[in-house]
Length: 304
Image (cartoon, rainbow, N blue to C red):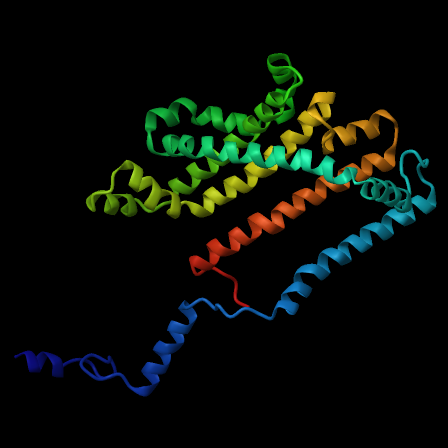
C-alpha cells in the first residue's frame, strides 16, 4: 500500500524522486543568497571610499567659507578667514597646549562614560525585566533623556561647587538615560523563546542576563551606548563652559569660553573644530568598528 501512495505522487512534484542537476543548482543558488558575503575589498580601496568623500566635503566647506569671507558680508570679528583660524590652531599646536587641553576633556569624558555604562547596564536590565521598576522609573528615564544636560549645571555647581564632582555629575545624568533606554529597547525586541529556553536549561537571572539578554540585545544596547557617549560629550562641554575655575583646569569647553570672553572668534572656531574632531575620532575608532563587528557576527554585514 505504501508503494501505491508513493507511485501516485503527481508528476513533476519531485516527491519520491531524486534531485536532478538543475534542482541542485537552484538549491546552491538559494544557499548562496542566504550566505553573507565576507570577502573584503583591498585596504587601499576601502581607505579611498572612506576618506575621499569627507575630504571633498571638507574642501567644499572651506571654499565656501573663503568665498563668504572674501565677499565681506560680515565684519572680520564675526567671520574670520580660514587662514586666521588655522593660525590660532597652529599656535596652540606649536606651544603644546593642545594636548593638555584635549586630554583634560577627553579623559573626563571617557571616565564619565564608563561610569555611566556601569550604572546604566544593571538599571536597564531592571527596567526591562521588572514591571514594577519599569512602571516607576521608565517614564522618568525617558523624560531625563529629553532634558538638556546644560540644565543640570547650575544645580550641580550649587551642590558640589566648582569641582570635578560637578563635571562628572552632569556627564552621568546626560549619559545614563540614553544607555539604559537603549538596553531596554534592545531587550524588548528579543524573541520571548530565548529567555524561556535559558530558563528551561537552568540559567539563573545572572546567567540569563549575561549569556542571553545582553548578547541578544547588543544592537540596541550599542546604539544606546553610542547615543550615551554623544550626550556625555555634550554634557561635558556644557559643564566646562559654565563651570570655569583654575582648579578644574582648561579643557576644550573652557578654551572655547576663554575665546568668547576675549572676543576672539578664531579661537572660538578653533575650539569648535577641536571638539568636533574628538567626536569624529571616537566615532571612527570605537563605535563604528564595534557596529561593523556586531553586524558581521549576525550575518548582516553589507556585501563588498
